Image (cartoon, rainbow, N blue to C red; front, side, top):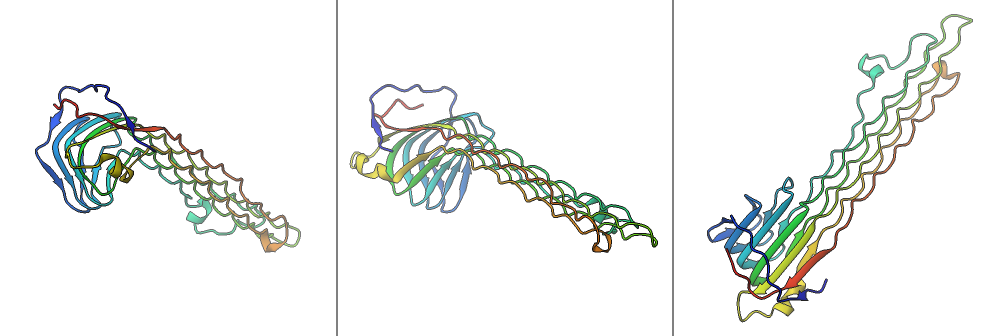
Length: 265
């Protein structure tokens, strides 16, 4: 994405939380404490993160002087959904892996569905006066949808009782749980200016990326397998029903804009 040049004035929100000069050491994470935060100076070490909590609906961050080392991130992602599970089969919990004499085997339990991925923080505005930029990735991606749980195995049919009885049919497999949908990406606006007059802003902005992708779809679980009839003589239980895959979350366009230095809080 190519940054755009604009000299339009920007709105400055009131009641910013003002941090003192802040350093985030290599491989460390700092959680943003509020929805409007001003860092007069922020230095991020290699692989460090500035984390915007996923329960925020919006966030406005101003960094007067920002220095970003290799592989730094500002993160506003949604939470991933939980995967479904295969509950314990009711017949298995009793210890009876085979039905009583001549009785059909029980159907396996159904796998549970995954839960949806959460949306990213939906409105993110970040203003940065750059003094150093090695690599910075700003992202507000939706959470991934949870996978569906697998269906349980059917119960073996009971053996016939007596000479004239019949063998029980094998139990069908449990139905598969469905995958869930991915979360929506957020609306992200990033505005930058050179806070160091020696900085070639056009040359270094190739190392700043902004993403707001939808979360990936949760995959369906696998159906449980059916089991054999009593004495392996009779109808075999069929597999459970297939689940459904979830849907991917919505991608959202982002903006990266060059501006003149704005008034700061």
